[in-house]
Length: 49
Image (cartoon, rainbow, N blue to C red; front, side, top):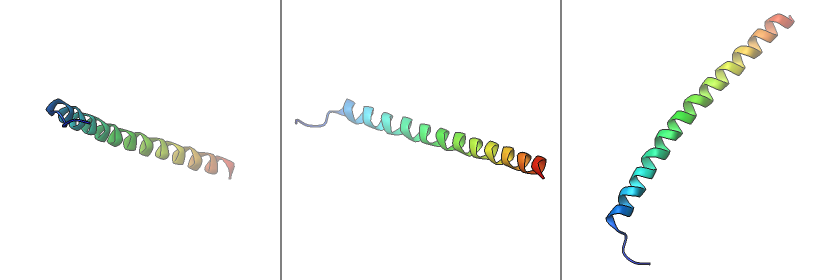
């Protein structure tokens, strides 16, 4: 293993920022899905009663 080259550092930081934004996006998607499931459950409960 040699020295870490500058372009490797740039690539790593780019990768980290991409992963971070993906993480945020996935959290939003998960929240939306959870809300949808919750609404559907509430609707089916009110229909069932």
